[in-house]
Length: 168
Ligand SMILES: [Zn+2]
Figure (cartoon, rainbow, N blue to C red):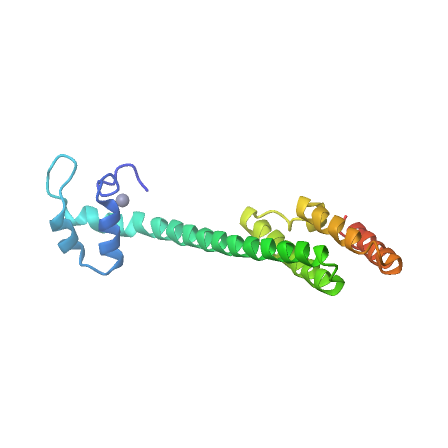
């Protein structure tokens, strides 16, 4: 926004922007406010502000809303992931192998989703889930859970190695 814009400098700027976005006539908006020095605001100044400053503000607001939305998504996926890990603990504690495997799958799905979401937020390439601390936790619990089943454990360990080498 231009430093010279008198409307941008007003403390009521947000209210003015809302009124303009809401379709209130420029003259009506201008007549309700005064400059920092208590002078009337010309409607031309409000026109200029609407033309030159408002679009950028709207773009920023849209971006902020998207980031906030993505943050909410992130929080939800984290909650799901925490629940999956909790179920995994319980399943492991009670020796329920199939339930443990299901929980691991869920936790892994959450991790991948988290990685994608964070990758998009950061505009960096997708996070490699197999490098994350949570992945190592899941991996450790998985292999520990499979301790009584050597064949299954060896098969899963082999699959994990393949997966991890594919992910770098
Ligand atoms: Zn302005």
